[in-house]
Image (cartoon, rainbow, N blue to C red):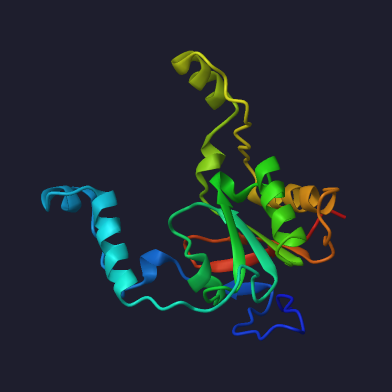
Length: 208
């Protein structure tokens, strides 16, 4: 089974099978790990270090000459978890896809907003949804909102979107995308759970 690649595009990578090998940033030996404490000892903050890294990046940067439309016409919705390097994991290159990330990778109103713009204004057709094992949302409940209200005096307008079963939450996310009246293309919606200990994607079939 392959990820859908539109015939008009020039695919640079194809991910195959129901279980797909992924990598995480923690597995990459090319990037040195610099802690916040290390940055502080050198006289700066983590943000300072990132800005300095950007200056080095810009020195070697060349305009790729592409517009904002993703080459593969796909949008990926995933958790913000720092262990998942989506581009490297899926074999994607600059300009291939739209990447939409939040806590849990759940389909919220704002994700629907981004997907709607992605499809209607920028031509994407496929949606890939990725949750993962050992997600932080599995240890939270909606009580988190009440605790915030007690602390700051105002209840958040957003839901925590916590869950106990990642598979079921992927199914719910797929259903939210499929039933959105704002999206033009809902025929190629696929969901996966990424195992943070093995680096494998496991496909989740939609609810029957």
